[in-house]
Amino acid sequence: TQTVSQSDAHVTVFEGDSVELRCNYSYGGSIYLSWYIQHHGRGLQFLLKYYSGNPVVQGVNGFEAEFSKSDSSFHLRKASVHWSDSAVYFCAVSALASSSFSKLVFGQGTSLSVVP
Amino acid sequence: GPKVLQIPSHQIIDMGQMVTLNCDPVSNHLYFYWYKQILGQQMEFLVNFYNGKVMEKSKLFKDQFSVERPDGSYFTLKIQPTALEDSAVYFCASSLGDWGIEQYFGPGTRLTVL
Image (cartoon, rainbow over all chains, first blue to last red; front, top):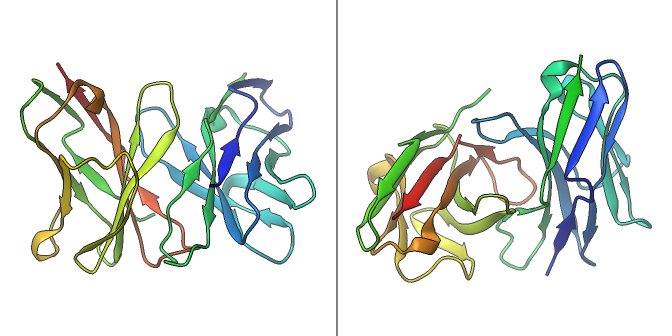
């Protein structure tokens, strides 16, 4: 069984600051990792994903994430945040099972507040 | 980007009644999902659906739950009868492919069972 942990429930930063949202997972097999953003009252929007290759992946709106197998992590980063980045961010893992049909296992979410 | 729509946005019903949650997935998508999020908790997978069949379901997908997509129209989640613990936000998602392909989510339906 795969699990996903987002250690920070809330993060507050000033506009223009950098931010890192942490995600750790536990699973030993082939996995696919992704990040989603959820603005208040809206559905989840896909940000980026990783399966193999370059461990640093680029997403939309200046977000990037870095995969680390040794740390079992997939942290999300942005160099300079904007007030519109305020939202809840979800890390998700999907394991390649024999059925090959995807189900996402989500972390608890991190609420990011960007202060002007 | 592609949008998934969910109808209604809110639904309040009495325990024991039947409810149907509707999802309008992205038009060319082939894989459909339902997730459940109880207030303050993680979003959890319920079921996925492809080619007219349930492919995988979690332990949360009780016998009272059913899904279908008649004639390529709405992808529906029906709960009959409802229970108090069914109160949650239900998110529909769709994707073009299966594993490793991003899922597109709707805004959710908030179900309150009284």
